[in-house]
Length: 166
Image (cartoon, rainbow, N blue to C red):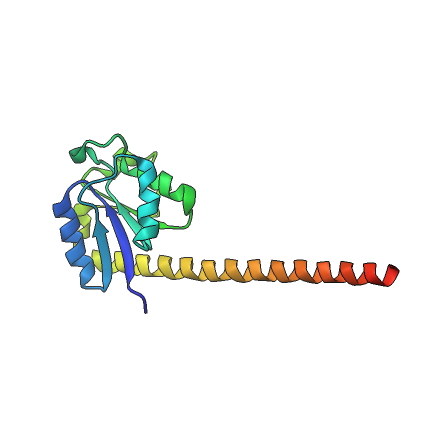
């Protein structure tokens, strides 16, 4: 089975290293960025290039002096991939993010992540979301092939009926 790979959009590389160690125990790879992109449009190419399956995002990215927040990065990525699973992981009170929470699939504080059993819960959610995403991609491809075959059959029927008339 392919190892699941997540991108942790975080402005503190020490926090990335902590999560990398936690998820490594579950055969889930977490990638971080030494330097966050200056332009928000540069996130999606990273997701594609690195074969990212899910996101972990810190809302406040002010340590690297970028002009966007974590939710902005998520919104940009979701313009191109609306199904990617996203977790909000922050040091701040989740009540501070009520407006943005709808964009995330799961939310928790970094302190909660250290609680016994919490990482197991998060890993289960990630694995299930990635399985569903994969299943949905396969179904979409099958549906597209079915439509293409139906169109080809219609074209052949039209051609055949035109030949009979002519």
